[in-house]
Picture 1: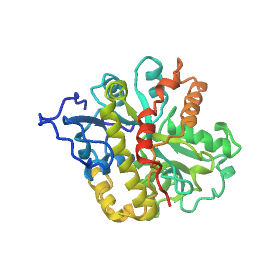
Picture 2 (picture 1 turned 90 degrees about the vertical axis):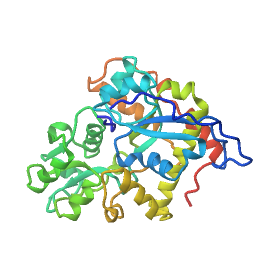
Picture 3 (picture 1 turned 60 degrees about the vertical axis):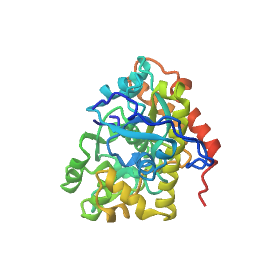
Length: 348
């Protein structure tokens, strides 16, 4: 399921404003603001992986380019994808699933443009947990165990399959247990009805804090470059509104860099945590100090080959009909152009 929930809002220009005079020095420090104010619609549901959007909004990076961003919500991805393809929404966040790829294969034109979530080596925010007294110590110990996963033919089952393969097992060697709600997995692990579960932050940290489960090794052991979430763009936004989309991407990358500064360099962390508390469901600032945060590449780069690998994985399982022109579907041109202007992130 795409990490986008909530109701369609048709794209409209912002309230009329007088053309902005081009200042001698652009407030952004790079490109001049747009002469007329525009509104960019983002389909986003408050997921932590939307940090780049939230930070750029709160710190004024969009404002520097005369861009007003608004968040739209959709009931499900079946409503969101056509709206994105039609340009009623400009940007969305998504996770690869068989249904997502099927929609593209059947003619829904959306573009995969930048990173919106991956696991950080050794500190995966999307990984397996086991009971606190579990006898599962290594991957081979998964044999014969009940393993909870939230969905089939999705990034969840893709990670599960990679783990099982890494363990030298097949699905026949374990019992796959479908539990759609991550919250329900907490109780299932705690009461012993399942032996392991593929869970997600902040529930992982909350479960550890409450003595309900423990982290089991790390997903990057077997999926070191797995693209979990992606920024999606409408074709119109990417090809017909380049002056807007380039500035949007510049602001987004600046937000990502502040996020990385905060969580991996401890620079400006309190301010960023305040922003995350405001925009996401995790309202406890102290817990933000403990969770394994979503990896967000400060240059917006994705694991492109893994996206293709996920598609082939679902297709081999019989979950996809049709093919995709990935040279069109994956369009990193705006991200690359923005990176040329900003230069590479200094991770030192």
